[in-house]
Image (cartoon, rainbow, N blue to C red; front, side, top):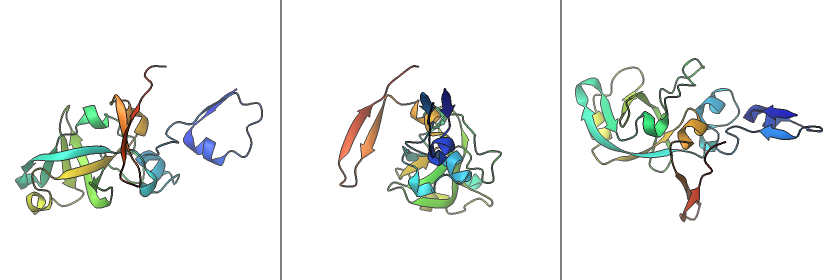
Length: 167
């Protein structure tokens, strides 16, 4: 007997007779889970560290080195109550930068923009070399793009965690 999904695992009070639980993004959470009320953004434990590498100031864009190869093409929030584009932008420490998302992505590059009106101060706000974190729509699809995770402890210690590949 197999059951699945992060919300199922979080709400189950007993699993008698169940032989497999497919917990999905339970260990990391993501923006889809945030949108359905399963977690808060600060509970999302997976992010992609990226760098601002260019601008298109006339459009209010900052260009980062995290495109769909880093974030995945998953637009799971597109039809939810809040569309995060290809991911929610945070500063390098993980603090949300409300209103800023990856609005577009090609293979290697992401387009960071403010939702609504373009940011006329985008170049000053995100100078070249600025490091940012992007929270993913779907932690599984994003995590699968990388050979290992870099886990940061509260103490600041960094460890590399290998991933299992395949099914």
